Structure formats: C-alpha cells, structure tokens
Length: 466
Image (tube, rainbow, N blue to C red; front, side):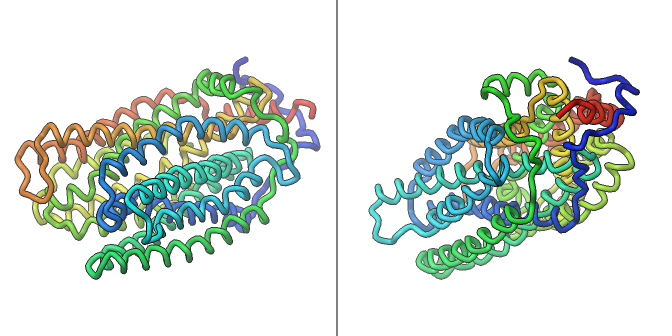
C-alpha cells in the first residue's frame, strides 16, 4: 500500500484513543537523562578501556582485540532481538520502560567491573573477568539504548516535537561525552603516578557515575509516560520485521545514508590520536580537539530544531552533510604544529556534524508511521535496532580498514612516520570522510517523505478505528 495522496482523509477527525501528546520541556529533559549517563560510559569505554587493559592491567592487545571483536559479533544478534522483543512487550509500564528499568543494574555493574578488576586475579582470570565485563556492558547498553530510542520515536507523531525529542537526546549524549573527557584527563595524569593510582581512580569514578546513572534511568522511567494504544502492536516475528524495514524505501535510504555518514565519523574517532601525534606532532592536544568538536556539536542543537521546522529535515540534513565534508576534507592540509587549524576545523566540523544526529532519528521516526500505515504494526524497536546496527557495523569496518591500511603503509608506533604512512593517515582522516559525506548528501536527495506527505499519513492513521 502506498502513502495517501494529498487530501486523503484530510478532514477525518482523530478518534479519542489517539492522544495529542504535546510534550513539556520537563518531560523531554527527563527522557534525555539516561543517555547522558550512557554517553559518559561509552566515551570512557571507547577511548580508554583498551589502554587501561594493555597499559595498566598488562593484558595482551591481541586478547583485548578478540574480546572486543566477540562483543561486536554478539551485537549483530542482540540488537535486532532486543528491538523485536521490546516491540512486543506488554506491561503496566508500557513497552519500553520495563527494558530501561531492567538495564539499570546490569549497565552500572558491568561498567564498574570493566574498571575495577580485583588485583588478586591471575592473567587468565583477568582476561575472563574483562571478557564478561565487556560483553556484559555492551549487552546491557543494548537493553537500554534501543528501547530508549524507540520510546523517543513513539512519544509524539508531530514532526517538530520529534526534532525536539531527538535534539535533547543528542545534547544529553554529547554532554555525557564532554564530562567523560574530564575523567579521561584525570586517568591519563594518574598513569604518571602508578598503575595502582589509575586503578583506584578508575574504580572510584565508575562507582560515582554508577550512582548518577541509576538516578537518571529511574527518573526517566518515573517521569515519561508511554502510549497505551501501541501495546501489543509489534511485529509478529523478527525476520518479518527486518523484511518490512528493508522494504520501506525511505527507511532503507535513511539507514544507508546513516551508514555512509558513520564510516566517515568512525575514521575521525579512530584516527584523531594518530593524526595529533604523527601528523600535527601535538599528541597531548588530542583530547582538546575532541572536546572542541563535542562542544560545537551540542551548542547549535536548538538551531537545528528551529531550522528543521523552517527548511524541513531533508534539506537541512543534506546541507549539513555537504558542509561536514568540506570541514573534514580541510584536515588534509594539517601539518606539524597546526594546532589552530585543527581546532578551527574541529569546531566547524562539530558545528554542522551534530545536525544528522538530531534530524536523522527524527526522520526515521516519521518513516515508522509509514510502516504502520502499510502493516498496521508499531515497530519502533526494529527500526532503532537497524539504526544502531549500521552505526556499529560502520565502526567495525573502519577498524579493520584502518588496521590493514596502516600495516600496508609500514606504520611503526612511536617513531617518525614515512611519507606513505602520513598520506594514508591524511586520506583516511580527511579525504575519505569528504567522499563519504558528499556521497551521503547525493544519495539523500532521493528522499521523498517530506512533512506534507507525513502529515497525510498521520491523518490517515488517526482516521482508522481503534
């Protein structure tokens, strides 16, 4: 079934079972609280867990690489399953909040385990401990982030409300990252004292953030209410849900564009420390570059919400992709000592780079309504799982590409690099993102579900009997 044409059911009144769901700013703020804690944890795990394991715990890098690889393979199974099970959940709390509530303790405990292994463990026992902690952490985060994103998609069908919801979610996530950079700085300083000092500080910090995370998760569950009319309307089986997602043309295009964007962003995440040390020759400035990007990524969030209402999600996301490509492409010209140039480019990249994480999930929420129009089901969990699956896949692919490319070029750590290695770093850090962002912008031109078409779909849905 295709989307309704202009004018179809335009005057049909919304039945009483379809609430308007006008959200207060307080409700949206409470909704964003869990991702502040999750953003903090993800930042510390992404940027420091490997270094903590190899430099402080003295675990072999190959062992840690294997453990992280296993966790990524498990994500490919757990993400769609959690999305499907979340869609079909029935409880007094709704479909999503029971999962957020259930994830609270596992997230906190696994994060604490990751940075608080007992000093008495043998080498083999330590590897097992870290393996359980890593797989447990990513599994517990999946139990939270997929239902949480699904909750945001179903809180309102009004496009501007959705921009506000996911704008707040993006701001919360980046705020958590920014606070985590302070902890990262303290941990790196503690390495200059002793391994015991790092262990003590890491254990102390994870305990405190665990308490804060429990409060954030609990407040979200308590303050945010779900739609009772969506209960029991998930997909009939996970394979059919995935099939419906892939057959949804606008959704498929959003996920492909998101994947290409994440390939570009993953290269930046992986290589910033390398570029700072081996290209710009300012290794200690790497956290400053990341901080600059994050601050400028979260600051214009209200602007993206306002512009999305004025210009529409499609035009705004295309514009941000084009400007992101230019900003990241400019990093090809960074040379030794170019701290100011890197900071300026990081600020420009952050300024436009955050836009996709506001309007992208909001646009994905709109195509979920199209899926309901076609299938009669509400599968926010399946669509959120698709979003996170392509994001994680892009990161994993870029890890492999980066490793092979640097090995092929002859990279040797802690020495002056050859011209071949410098070129590979410049290409992966600047030219590859430029290509990816431009390609994503060109592809998204084909997106057809504008606000007018979405409005007609929502009207048709409201006209249906309960």
